[in-house]
Image (cartoon, rainbow, N blue to C red; front, side, top):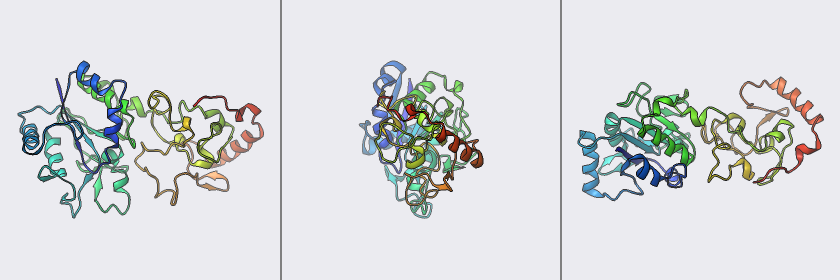
Length: 320
């Protein structure tokens, strides 16, 4: 039996809603097939008041083994580092987190707010929000850069706004079945199983990207979303176009640009003031290019691509 405790800090419950929609495996599969025992969850737990506090203290004391602590939402430190803006069960949530993280075998941060601080940590960050082990791209966060759990691992980060439901359940299964050691983490502590390739991998619009065949309106079924609508697929790490949402689609397949929500800089308002739905350019060359691409080479490639574009590059050949 693997005991899981799920807590929320500065959260909108988006990752909880995503989790409950998981299909491979489902939440019911976690319990029935993989021996996972959900000690408590904000939307599923039945304990309240004194009973909940008793459960939390029993986890801290070791009376109840805490195998996995899942945290959703940012760690709120305001005002002035006290954490009083986010109280839970008669204590600031950050105090529960501090104690529970010391005894948990594994710690999983779910969603951008728990991983990097997310939207609450945007400047000027009045809630003094942090991620569990990062603040944006800077390692440290609430727990500190050198923190490791009882199992010897740092916080396992599953970013996204929200994170894909199957990313969450598959990592929980990997921990419960003793296979988490087989899943390497990248430099931002994300499982490489889901974050070792760019979102553009598997995008049905790649042929349009190659020939610079662009569209200017959301929802259109043909054309690349990068040039005029600011799609961040070429710079974002995720498997959204390989592990489809609801087994059916993705943002780009539905005519919506990737907004880069698995990267620490999300939602990018500081990088692109005013809007994220526009690729900022200098003399026609995007200010931010896919990794490894030089501006001079890109300008030449663009000119050649447009001149050699075949008629079929603008054909609507795929299905949403």
